[in-house]
Amino acid sequence: MTEAQPNLLRDVVVYLAAAVVLVPLFVRFRLGAVLGYLAAGILIGPSVLGLVGNAEQTLHFAEFGVVLLLFVIGLELQPSRLWALRRDIFGLGLAQVVLCGLALTGLLLLLTSLSWQAALVVGLPLGLSSTALVMQLLAERQLAGTPFGERSFSMLLFQDLAIVPLLTVVAALSRAPVTNPDPGWLVAAKTLGSLAFLVAVGRWVLPRVFRIIGTLGAREAFVAAALLCVLGSALLMASMGLSMALGAFVAGVMLAESPYRRALETDIEPYRGLMLGLFFIAIGMSLDLAVVAANLGLIAVLVVGVMAIKTGVIAVLARSFGTEWPRAIRMGLLLAQGGEFGFVLFAEAERGLLISHSAAQLFGAVVTVSMALTPLLFRLAGRMFAIPDEPGSRDGPETAGGNHGHGGNGGHVVLVGGGRVGQVIAQMLRARGHAITAIDLDAELIDVTARFGNTVFWGDGTRLDILRNAGVGNAIALVFALDGAWDPQALIGPIRAEWPDLPIIARAFDRTHTIALRRAGLNIVVRETWDSAVRMGRDVLTALNTPATIIDAIEAEYRRRDLERLDLQIISGDMMTGADNIIRAQLDLDPAALDPAALGEIPPA
Image (tube, rainbow, N blue to C red; front, side, top):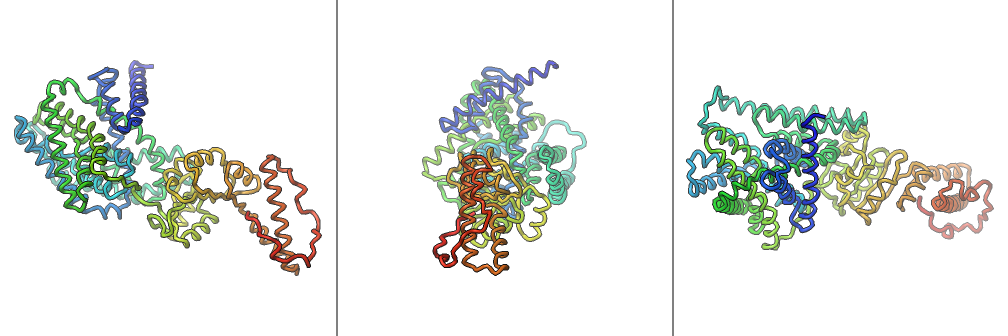
């Protein structure tokens, strides 16, 4: 073991221990997980306990959490939906970046001795917000899919698009000698070319790659391919001097209409959560308390000034775009903090000899403090203006017919298995107006159903995380229509524990599977061949000129005996229990006594 390995292992243990101790405490006192991560970073960072160092390197690595976050967001935004947000993105977003940046430039000229060039390259980055922080807060309050959440996200998305122009501004004002800089037209060409390449690959190449992997059933390869997709798009954009997060977002949008998006979201989610937590810890570590103590008054004034100006400007802009005043003010407070890209742009300004190292540290402290205050202010705004949260998901469940949203008759059904049985169930549910989120592992089946206009997502529907991502928590029913026997023991218990009132209907492969499903706690179990076999038996007896009343009696007696035997077998666990109930000889049936009304209801399968 090399010397670096124990140090790395020790740092990982420190990160995890700090998060495990502080984050649950902050969540317990309703302060939010983000504030817990920031506090953990401050505590273990160089300014307090000094358990870990090199916050800048950690922050650079942890930026992949933001990259993964933007990829997941892209997966949830189909191109058509993104186009519908174009007014907010390019209208509201552009106005926010320009007006906030110029207003903060004026504030810096008023409060500091910076030149106008230095004030501009600091004021414009301070006008940006933290995508990671804002999206985490929206997700915690289930606001991401509401008009409030989508309008906030539109501004964040334009801010990511503005990174390249802002870097260009810093380079243009730089006092450092530059050798052979790329002309503006070449930078624009590289940007458009990279985006076009990502769109082409995401549209025509990646779905085929995931289809091949899905057909082979290699889950580890699927996870590796998902990570390769994210990191590859980030690397391409970074090599062009563009935002890594923007590249991942474009790749996600291109896969948003793919049947593999649910599985991609599910497999990426654990990495996204861990990396995003590390990102916030690194932000806390980067806070230099010595700089804060030496410039406490100036930092306090700057934090208040930055957050007040951004809140006011964003609230006025949001109101002008149709948001009512209470929510517009809350939106302003949500986006009032400085963003993670500020650290990148401050470093570029320092390299360009526009600001000193101490100034970069000071403005970094302003960003960190503003991020730490945002969760508290956002929660306070919700109480002050009595604004109820608007729970919702970014998009509604996809129906088997490719439509979105809930059906006209109240809610969506999660259907696991899109084969012969699943397709019949889907048609009957659509006839009643119910939306459907269908899941299957057969990539070829997914392609075939797509030709008929139906949407089936690729994934293992017997995994709890896949079901959760498919929206089972908001479903009105869960249907298992899988071909073959599957083990219900490890799945049904957690589903019942988390959603005890959710109706679950399951298709059973045979009698043994029926017993397993019933013993797992399912009451509505349908044996896939039982009713068809009974139907064939009736048809055979009809062909043999058996009176209809006799056929009805035989069917009723067979069903009664079979269900009694099934109940005994479920209780005892012995397949031979109730063997005496099997009809082995001709029944002594009196045709005169066989009134159909006296037969009673035929029990269900």
